[in-house]
Length: 158
Image 1: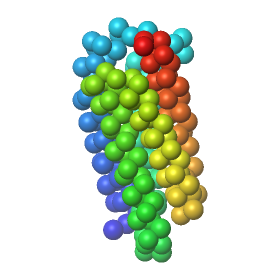
Image 2: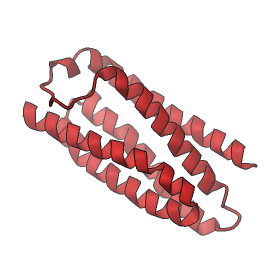
Image 3: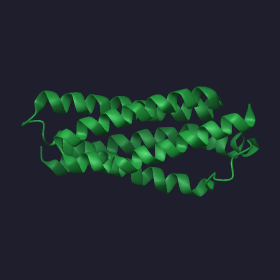
Image 4: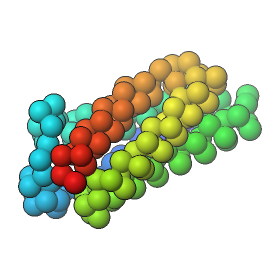
């Protein structure tokens, strides 16, 4: 299997996670979320879909580039992709906690774990393929911002 196929498979997986998160998110964005007090730096709702789509694409390319090194570094790649899958699952869980359960505090705890797993994935990826590691930096930054936003929403609405 060549690099492009690996990236394409990773892209399908990442976009499926994104889609599943949007299914959980969409009803609450129209009903519950507008009722919350939000900080002044809260972005407009329309920005989230294109940002997340871009981030899922960058994540998929990163995962595909790492996966492509499996013949050279089998165990290291398997561990790195294991961390990638864990953070991807945590990514989806956050939407469920925040939007489906409507629990910003629990989502805040989870987003800290998510960020730590992304950072660990970054550390693993950068040792295998520097570009793959660098592709995760916007994701880490956005999740850090999302964590601050999540904390602010929790604080303003407790």
